[in-house]
Amino acid sequence: MMNTNSSADQFTFGMIGLGTMGRNLLLNMADHGFAVAGYDKDPEKSVLLEKEGADNVVKGFTDIKSFVNSLQHPRSIMMLVPAGPIVDSVIAELTPLLDKEDIVIDGGNSHFTDTTRRDKEMADKGFHFFGMGISGGEEGARKGPSMMPGGDEDAYQFVEPILTAVAAHVNGDPCVTYIGPGAAGHFVKMVHNGIEYAIMQLLAETYEVMRKGLKMDNEAMHAVFKSWNEGRLQSFLLEVTTDIFAYKEPGSSTLLLDGIKDEAKSKGTGKWTSQVAMDLVTPIPAIDSAVSMRDLSKYKAMRVEAASLYADEQAGLSVDKAAFLAQLEQAFFFSMITTYAQGMHLLASASTQFAYNLNLADISRIWRGGCIIRSAFLETMLSAWEKNPELKHLLLAPAVQETIKETQPGVRAVVTTAIAAGIAVPTYATCLSYFDAFRSASMPSNLIQAQRDYFGAHTFERIGQEGVFHADWQGEASVQP
Image (cartoon, rainbow, N blue to C red; front, side, top):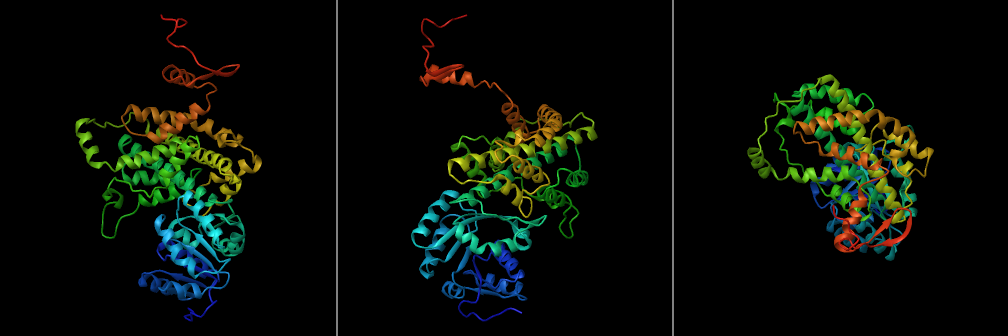
């Protein structure tokens, strides 16, 4: 039964923020035998925590001082509150109550630059601090998430037994590992979310092709998604999509999906991924496209007006449905792999730029279970970096090359057919174009360099000749046809 005694030094771990994620993660810890305490200003959340944790040693608090005093020394406290100023306000309220060597963990989706700052500020005050990305949603928090801790390694080692116990496990491996110094954990979680954006957009575009192009009904689409999820495309996001295409609210004869507005929300992590990728000069067009499409979805009124101005009868695709669905499966696999490859390339760039010393094999390993982007393909990714830790890009891995070559015809067929029919497939198209540019030994960028030098004297480099050059493009040496 619940231990209601709130004497000092009783609880092993504390949680600030008892919303869905915080409460479920704390209950997960309690299920594994840890005495835990939670704090929230909302009394109802503390009551709910104690009710759901009644069979374990769980205590809810609404007074932060009593909460802090109830924890064993050195105290281990995680915050699961909305990213941004709220995190700073919680830290400001919390730190006067702490002792030196206490540990504070930010388990939210904080921007990595904020985590870098907080890491230094807390260290200067004598406290241990680290940021940790957590993926898996409500179910993951309760049954086993994937966790990406980075920052103070000593602090991580102290709480590692708890995190290892509550993490998802795949083939005996816990889906948690020390990621790297500073804000490495939150950076990796941010890129994880960017990949998530792109795969979700690919599934939405797949839905669009099936619905508008192949004129498939919901039942038929559910069958296809279910079949795919039983094969090489198996993934959490495909599983979720399959379930959505079978869900009807009690008493309803139609899918809930058909009653949901086509205006997608976001919390910013996809945008952050695109922004930092541009700063690091590392292209991730699949994620960029997904962010842009979410943004475009919000302009519903303008889209409705444009639809009336540019009305186009959707006659459907003139294709063999079974054959085209096989190509669509290839296209999705090709594009999913390309999305992973872009995200991992960004992690490699960040590892060098920010001295994170990221282990891409370990990151692939902990993403295999618990997290939103888990998929069967992550086993191939793990194997690729285990075989070659210096692998520069996932598309250069031998095992991946075989799959890309096999699925390439499918993505070409889907993109060209959909575009010809006026069906938007921007993320599919950008994955294919990225691949075609990536495999090009000679890009047309020499023209861009010439243009920049022509109008701005920005100089250029020559093939086979050292140095930096500038041409008098309108001078006597110019040749006019």
